[in-house]
Length: 280
Picture 1 (cartoon, rainbow, N blue to C red):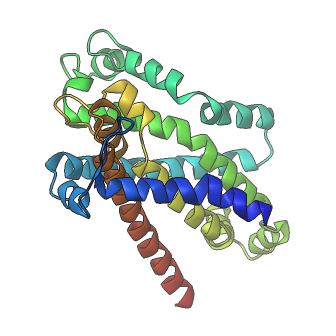
Picture 2: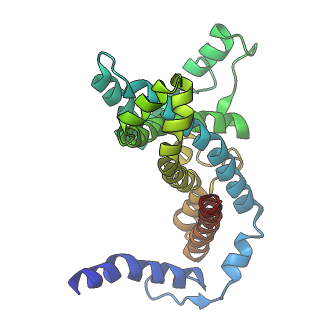
């Protein structure tokens, strides 16, 4: 009972309060009169071009970064699952980005991708020769998201790697040995032994990374602030702007719950697709 009371106090009460605020033109000033407006904030959100573009931005960020984090994380896990000198050191070094501060690394990547003589421009102009002139990374929508996505992949790969490593250790070695006796090479053992065993881990990783992708916040806030001209807004930065810069807490709460509904819908589709495959 005390545990349930604590859960209600910490989780349920704030959620209900935020839901009620999203249905009002909420007055942040103590003693101010809040006006009940029903679903107007939600209707406004889904007809607001900035919020819709923010959803597109978050979706594009998720579509690009999630497969990259999973594939690179899986590759590193396979590499570090075998016997090699310094394996533990490599695992620690590759996991370090996961535990570093979002604030610190966001500012670091902002410095690396600065429009002038930044590290990113040094690589694409002088080393690789992909473009003739320095790229103004944060002045265009999608070039800004290249920088933001690079940070997201760099920071998330280590987590995917660790989960895949844990899943690989659960694969019985005798299955690998049996497949080897049947003539399967390394690729054959990966496809027919390791990959099926990694499927549950892949499902969990993809669901959590998709949720994290739509909740991208600190990197966008610090690297672009949602600009220029709202071009790089994502739902959480737009919610933050509405609530804490414009003091429109009702609309900010509606944006937060709208994002929750979108994520729940995507997770439900993903779960149903996974369940159908199990049934097949």
